Length: 105
Image 1 (spheres, rainbow, N blue to C red):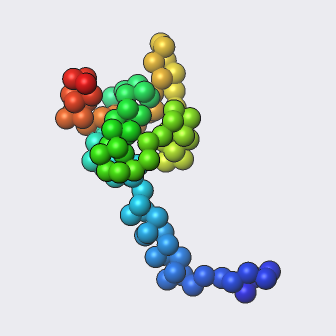
Image 2: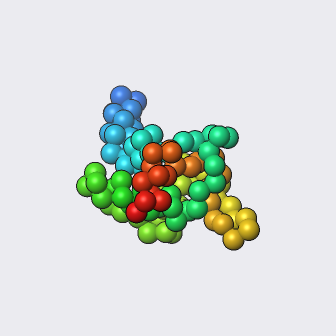
Image 3: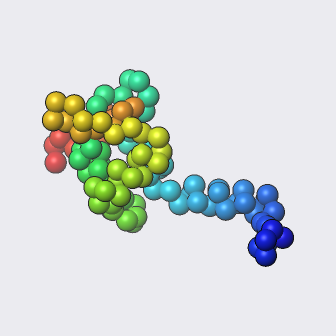
């Protein structure tokens, strides 16, 4: 016990992390719909958010406002930038299949 609090055993902490990761729709969206790394082309923040919200709607998850989307992406380490009127996150883009679907919509 630390300062009047119970300390969770490491096994319980690990299970909590695993559960949280399994419920992480953004991680699922990134894995399924995006490309990451240096090969990822700059796609507008709005296009990324639109793709995420479509994914969230299809999977029964909560959609995100622009502000919450930016916060969640930044928390994952993606740097937000503005250049020549375009707003985007460095190191993440839409997979070709998802980019085509977004352009057709």
